[in-house]
Length: 331
Image (cartoon, rainbow, N blue to C red; front, side, top):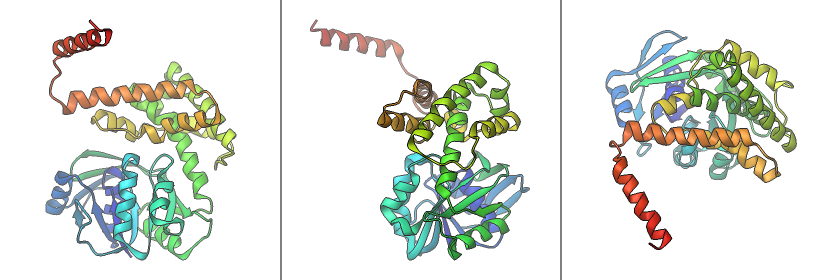
């Protein structure tokens, strides 16, 4: 089975790297030229809970010219899912299919819109990774990956994917209700990721900071009310208990915290932002989630300015703003 990893950040890199190390035909596709260039020259460094390895595998910045593949595993951030869906459509064989292991909701729908429901599978991963520098991925926490067909069938192809991932050292099971798992992880990420990005605290630190711990409870009140109103079935009957127990013992760095630190756009729109949109459609108020979304958006902007833009001339900006206000006032 020829596998293309569409998106080779922390997760896509270590999944693809471990698959290649186990002898499977895995290729990385990612637009970051420095990252891909280092992998092509020196190999991909994969380190963490499965040891330290230098893996030689094909890596490209574009899919142009590549032969068709059997499986496209989508690991882009959610902002790039529509583009990844078009890329998957270009690279897959007629009987090929895609698997999304992304965070948030809306990814399955974007892939189905391009590929059709029959060619899309879904899942969630409770693994975590870090991307400290180009050419290197760190597998920071080993957890369970759950994957399945959208119609609930236990198909030979989904069992084959699970077998490959297990052989690569990534514990995986096949489930008959992948969207319940997608929504369950969505709830977990909405409760944890944005707060970590805002405060700079990891799970165990937030749990042990009473004010932040209490705010997480308020977020969960709103999130679970929306889920209940929509009639979504979650995997765990008591998600709050599970989320709190997880936060108490975990100190990994969520991807949203990493994105803020790096001055990158976050996935807030497909997490708490999605809760806000769903709540508005239902006529429900979710003020804590609205506030969290606004703060993360502000952090995104400030970090992008600080890390990726020239220093701002605030005196000139203030003068321009004053002139704009006078024009609007007619003076």
